[in-house]
Image (cartoon, rainbow, N blue to C red; front, side):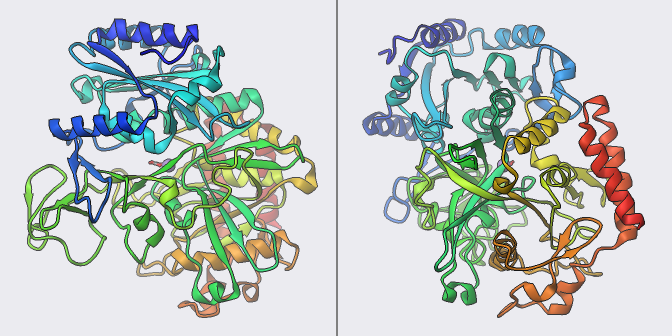
Length: 591
Ligand code: OXD
Ligand code: MN
């Protein structure tokens, strides 16, 4: 049964059903009974495995094809009308050609199958920062995951009314053929088409495709921002909770930072960290002139391996009910799940992520895929912020950028101004490690952690950041900080303990925001006096911390050359302000 009279929605849905030759069309209502029936169907076909309902109530396991386990940047396209508007960091595909090819793939793709229509809201339904999408798909896995990751159901269509302001998302599993896999964004059309994949990051179209690639473009045109940022709140006794948004490239511990548990010394003083979001922030100027952020998502699509009671107990607890696991090992001893790094006791009698019998005590193969995931409802998180559902968002006091840099970049520094902060974000990057293919020890620049997710020319994106700063009064602008948890010693060991101890660095930021401490002015920005970092109870010496707070001017001169080289990619779309910031860095280093 159709759930709306909105002609644009009906045209889109009917057009897709016709092209795909769907056997039937099912609208997802948001009712539990419908989800229960779909879950039962997916269990009966083997698409989902029901886990131990006493230990893991409402939890399911799904395995993808071996060739379909991660986002595929090489097959992800920004189909802007003009190539120059996709910019140097994106793959571009002419939209006329892209539509022709994709429609030929979609032709008959739903034959003999059901097409599900998922009306979803990114952000609380009807909120001032929220946006609506409709995803059509032939996958129950997608329906059940979208239910966790977004707000789904009829109320979304009621809010949409007759408006055409919705994103059209089309997904078809097809044969999961990697040669014909395409993840295409059409920013000028508010449209996404994803074919030949059934892996979360490629098919849960609300997440990277909409909430970052399409939304970043919408944000540029509508004067707001869609960022690859976690949002956290820090409570201290006698003070208002302070909210910060932080951008890190994938696999730098965003979920861990978002759910940080402060060291006991801080807990005893009353410090608490609350999670608003772990991956994406939508940011808009509020009525009081400050910037407010919402987490447009409704759940966490987290990496399972390495998640354990010590590294992130809050994430682990979040996965204990109503969670979908993808590509982890199945522990046959009690019909639960296991992954590398969960504990030191892998099951003997298990099935690995590929579906083969697996003995965790003797096998040299991994039980879970390194990119195996949990899709967990945000409300399961013990430290979820009470503001999580606030449609107006939380006021942001600081932006944090960071990456994996074994040297050069100090543990933390503060930018000199909004413009300098944008520069600091634009030069973010991680050094390549032996884990990835290609040269080791090369800095891969990933501006604001948006390189794979910016839906338009990155030079224009930098300008948008500068414009957003100009739209906010100076005294209301968030401060900018850069962190590096990943400094190593001569043997390659991490010197900073990380995890909960990162609270010590956040605490310094709070003191800077409140104007409680001075800092050393260096060529790269403001660096803490080591005595201002509370190391009470820390397993790291003051000398070590002083060492990773030292600025090596020679190394930074080399860094500056790398930055200028990187900036060349943007040609005349690089804002003059950023070129000026790079020059000023060099002249400060020369002083
Ligand atoms: C993610 C990513 O899955 O950034 O969040 O890759
Ligand atoms: Mn991410």
